[in-house]
Image 1 (tube, one colour):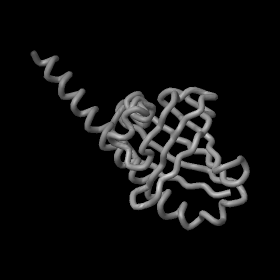
Image 2 (cartoon, helix red, strand yellow; image 1 turned 90 degrees about the vertical axis):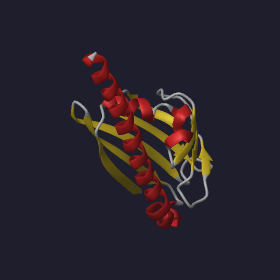
Image 3 (cartoon, one colour; image 1 turned 180 degrees about the vertical axis):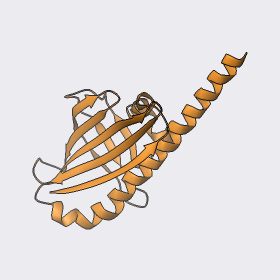
Image 4 (tube, helix red, strand yellow; image 1 turned 60 degrees about the vertical axis):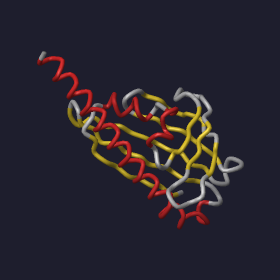
Length: 158
C-alpha cells in the first residue's frame, strides 16, 4: 500500500470549491492534471477519467464513485486493467476553516501487486499532478470568488 497526500488552503467557500470540483465538463478549461472527466459525481456512478500530469503520458480509467458528500468529500476507486493489480482510491476532501476559507486535501491510496513497480512514478509525476491541480483549483476558486464578491459589493453600493 502507498498513500500520496497534498493539501492547500483556498480563500473561498466550501460550496464554491465543491462546485468547481464536481463541474467535470469544465475540467479541460482549468485542470492541469485531470484533463477530462465524464459522468456524474453520485455514489455508484462510473466515471471516465483521463489523467495526465504535466510532462508525462496520460491514462484513461473508469472509476466508481464511492462517496459524494456535497461540500465535503468526493471519493472514487479505479483499477488498472483488473482489480488487485493496481488500484487507486482517490479522495478529495474540503475542510471548512472559516466562512470563506477551506483546506482542500487531495490524496490517493494505492494498493495491488504492481504498486512497488510504480513507486518512482507516483512520487514524481502523480504527486506533481496533485500539486498542480490544487494550485489551479485555488486560483479558479479565489478568482471567481473575488469577481462574485466585487460584483455583489458594486450592486449593494448602487
